[in-house]
Image 1 (cartoon, rainbow, N blue to C red):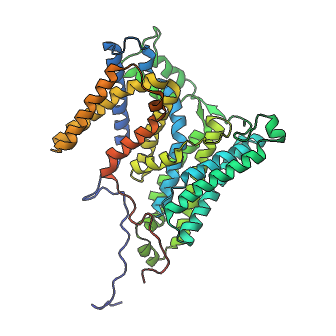
Image 2: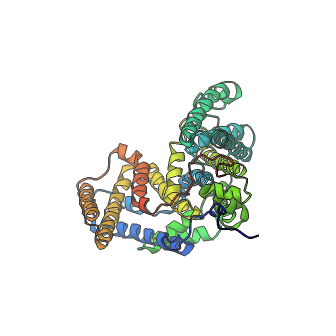
Image 3: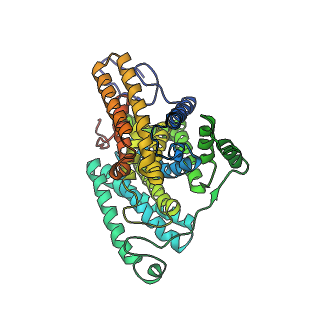
Length: 447
């Protein structure tokens, strides 16, 4: 077919994000992620060595320093990271299709409630399924409001959060406060306990790593013991649902980046008009993405009520839906970066839950090193104002560290949220969201 000079050109093909071409950012490959993890372990090992060798806090127990990389700390961090990562994974599915999902927190709440409700009555795995379905219902409501009726995505997400909290509060009083549920420990604010989901430990490997972490003389070695503690925490008392979560990260990467389905879905988040011109049913793909998003968040909620605590508690999510959204942004809307962000936030969460103010106080020294590194990098880039500000803050934090033995309880509880703010502020310049994320779309609007 001959195209004349006066013909109207078709809409531009969608330019999908995530590349590393000219003007782009280099993607985090698996070797790079491993290198970053090794660097983080080396930093923690160095801090521990400095603290114990120089006796920076004479009255503090040595265990406060070792808790940074102990296998128990890593196991707890992984348990805290899974619900955050699943919520972030839900956000990734929705936003790659162009729908902002602020309602992740509400979908997690639905997952915690319905997961615990079905789990204590039947089987914990049926509880997992019920939690996923509860989250998917929240996702369906969000898709109906944003995709079909064109409601602002932020308003719809906030409404989902409020609705989920109200619904679960009402049904908790109705279902858990009477009859058999009350006899088994239920109350208006919590469910009866559910059975545990099976945990696994890699036989042989776990014991071998534990023997490396702490030798026969009860001593720990620089970096070697830290690596052994880190790896040992990943293969000891691992919930089967954690393995499912890891597989979901792999599945998400394969589906969204290695299949034609994923290409069409991501095109809806980049340029839905161009995708429509190529025959993509944009509405269908947005619905699928947001419902899957809700299911992922619901699974994260079910993990909290069936693995972390075995019961539903009012306020159990504790803002993890929002932290998951922050982890997704930190990961630049990609599964690998999201996993790193969830691990970081989960580590901070586990640190304050397991060890309290003394160990969080130790982390101030790590913050000093990070700030000094930022100052050096900014000075190298001739950003003198940022370099000076980072150096001044580093000196202030160091003085705080040297003049105290612990940190206030309020700061300990806020540690995960402080880490969230710091990470997002440091990574803001490299972020690249899908171009049509949050935009209203109407079929045929490009004609």
